Image (cartoon, rainbow, N blue to C red; front, side):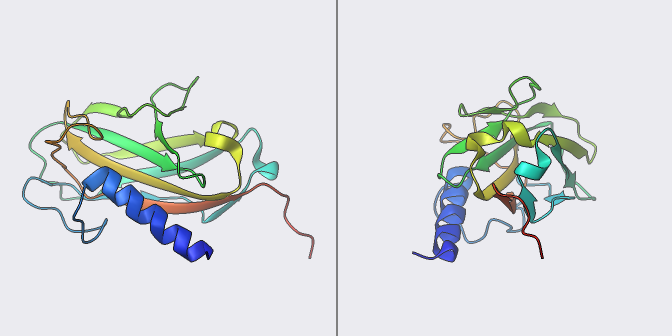
Amino acid sequence: MSNHHYTAISLIALILLFCGPPVVSAQAECTQECQAQLSWQGLEDFYIYQENIGKVIEANLVEQEPSNRTEPVDLWISIQAPSQDTFYLTPLSAAPFSAEPQPFKTSVALAPTTHALQLPLDEFPLKIGGEYILSALYVKAGTTEVTDDTVVHRSNVAIEIVFIHNATKPVL
């Protein structure tokens, strides 16, 4: 099976995890209940693990203006590893990733927000090379996005794919 096929399977699994079937597009425009547009900024496509030990991947998750949100939201950020395991970004610097579903931030203020994120590469789930799919989603405050059947999305699902390689850069 080609890597592109695994990429498509990973993306479909992630969309189903966040949105439930049926889903037309992970970047679809929000409905009236879904009032914010999120996007990733500052991520590179490719990282080399050996050269970045002790470093962090810095990124911004940006809520686009104008935002029509009328209530606080919870922010969920997940990372799907090449193994297809899903991990959730936590607010704890000592344990930045967890296999247990949980929001990264709760009760995000009403004003459009930029979330500055630092993802420690040494703590990345599984520390294996391959494709990592980062996803972010606002949900109604207090909603358990993975297990609650009445999930109410308050944003699009922002998806970014990064590749982490275990070896050093080849000498040219």
